[in-house]
Image (cartoon, rainbow, N blue to C red; front, side, top):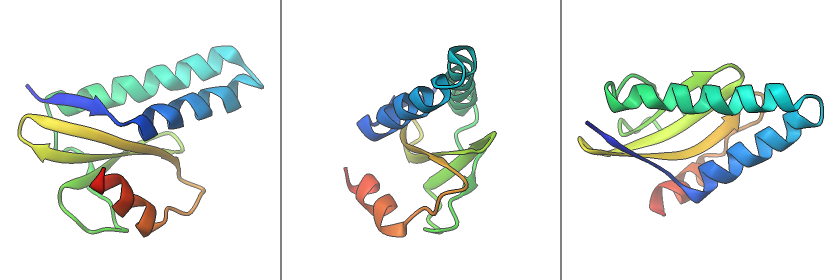
Amino acid sequence: MVEIKFTDQALNDIDEIAYFISASSSYYAGLQVQKFFQRVDMLERFPNIGRVVPELNHKSVRELIEGSYRIIYRVLTKAEIHILTIHHSSKRLRKSRLKRLIKK
């Protein structure tokens, strides 16, 4: 089974998303956070299920789509995956930001 680790950036992203949604509904904020974790749980069994992130075109950096969000992760080994960031799909994702996240 694959070990999944969330980077500080990914955890901060989840907190910010939940905070933003909670301004309208704490119920839906909690539901969205739950959906993120359920989606990521799939990676334990299917680590390469996500598509390659087009901005990088690097086969170890992949993404899952959950609603309007991109869950971007890196497959480090067959036993370890890092969740790098959770990004709203309406916002531009800078290649330089992704490269910085990969180096951490």
